[in-house]
Image (cartoon, rainbow, N blue to C red; front, side):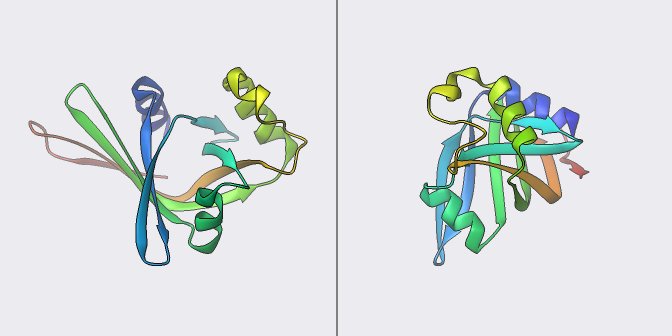
Length: 130
């Protein structure tokens, strides 16, 4: 999982896919964090992406850097505790102008039953489960 985290941090931007009534939706994301041995992302509860995840927690993200791409498929679980929200915002202080660990909008979610696959045109795919 740490390798997945480090790759996503290096990329800076990854793309998260959700489902909205049968229609795939993809958007750029940039937050990634490890807290209590879980891989977390962050968004706002008021956003459509949050509502889509609550209806169908199965998501997939994709990122690309230096000839390698990563796909992570799994379920996202909301964690409403203060501690993971504060940890995420400490990792991304620029978000503190929009989010606060005590507000009703800040949302952090961790991956459950995740399968991460690293691929390239030159190497065989490699999968990590967490």
